[in-house]
Length: 283
Image (cartoon, rainbow, N blue to C red; front, top):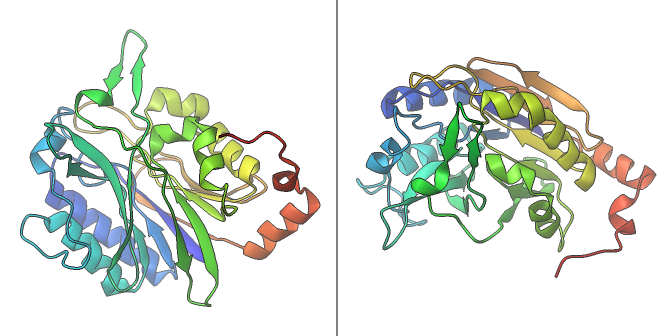
């Protein structure tokens, strides 16, 4: 299955970001991608963290995603349907009930434009090195449920896919739990890693998660200097089950394409049956 990670440098203007996202999705679909994933905050990186609150949507009815109060979800559904692809919609701010905060939410749509999965970011990023300070908990409510779903590709093959977002990458127990009932074939991780933490840990951690779970990783990211003055690390990449980087784009908008192979995955799992050798289990 061919998969694509979309890299963007999102702006404070939602319409502009959607125009760019839809153009890159069309490009990836034309190149044969069946699964396409957008980066975290693809819809908006504002001048202030609180800007996302102003564009937040209620969660659309999964069977009627066309209400006027959920235009971003409608566009994602229509884009997936238009191109006949599985679309991991980066993240959107989804209103949290009885709260002035929002969830940072990944929504997944099938080739018919139906929403098939929702994941609310569990781990909220906090970082302060004296020069740069981030605290997502000021605007976000954390999710509390790990989410994986099954994708059936055009050949009729099933893929078990785990959803995660950015800072989740640092918590290997999340992925162990996600693969407990059924081994994962792919981890998708939309991100907006800071330049500072990205240089230190992005590729290292992505490849570690692939090696630990002997599965593929698809990591679409924000990649460049934003209008608010912050710089995201980029380096969107696709990683194979042996930890090898199959494709990467350092910075700037674009698409990162690679073929995912269950045959290759089975080969490395046969050669190194580490998943069968686990002794210590959580819970």
